[in-house]
Image (cartoon, rainbow, N blue to C red; front, side, top):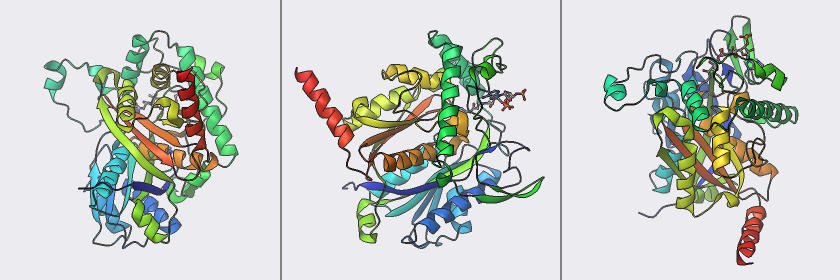
Length: 412
Ligand SMILES: CC(C)(COP(=O)(O)OP(=O)(O)OC[C@H]1O[C@@H](n2cnc3c(N)ncnc32)[C@H](O)[C@@H]1OP(=O)(O)O)[C@@H](O)C(=O)NCCC(=O)NCCS
């Protein structure tokens, strides 16, 4: 079977709310958030009629109640896609949405479908992390997996143990920069265009959820210094240098490159390669490292070729470990998360992978010389996912120039 090129045409998300009763999505169903995203993707892309979407693929970590019943199929029906549209749901915890996108892309590449919508949702208010999980006790006993593996904040503390050179101060500085970059991007109007406003019912009445609830633009090192360390007494991981507990949905519109051409659509990015890799569950934050090495091997590219990196900031320590592995500048590598990350925006688990992708999509538009972008994230129970995208909104000179400069340097 011959593989076809797959392109991303568009992407959009809801605002990310705070999980729990104080969050604006508390009275809103997760599947309605998915429906909002699907309908907005169709509204923004009138060349794609609801009867043209053939696959609707959604990731969610908890697959029950308002996130259950095969979300991809139920949300396709609710959103008014054709009854002929197939639908599926998938769980790879934080990378659920990333997996929905890469799986739908693989389906398109193999000719199963021409057009698909894929994304992720997590209503962490309705579905607190692992609340209804029933881990097999043999997992902890026979396989000698530490109980830490089930609490993500503890896995982040373990990373601090593993890399003693990554101090709490470094993690706090990384977190403060993330908040500052997000605030700047918000002020410059870069973020709201990625968000579809949603009218929701709250204890204060009907409100429009159109801005993320998590960001703290006034974050300072002083304010971060003495925050509690909920995962270990005298630990290094705090609410300030960790992502939060959030509700949100994010999705993208994918199609075969040939189909986009036929419809006269100018796609934004081409999927170059993707992969996933496992690490020890107790240090799940390391996941992006092997996944990124592996995706470079698959694609024949290296970090030198990458102009933009979107890493999901589950925890600051885990991003710094990644940056050190790839010789990036700590704490402020200009290519990495230029508009901030999950420490500021929040991290509604399965929706974060597609959020990284739509950041790349908009960043590419502003950087036409950028050629390749990497979206990478860690995953609970010890995995990483990495996807490389090519910018179709520019001329890709920058990476090409850099590559030839590296080559001539090597020759000297
Ligand atoms: C870390 C965590 C436990 C904190 O939860 P929380 O206590 O509900 O967080 P809050 O937002 O209420 O913040 C706690 C305190 O820190 C303060 N705080 C948080 N961020 C701050 C910042 N940037 N600057 C200053 N203070 C800050 C809050 O004001 C609050 O103070 P208060 O207790 O005086 O009201 C939670 O966010 C968490 O579990 N995060 C990790 C999520 C996760 O594991 N995801 C999966 C990753 S793989």
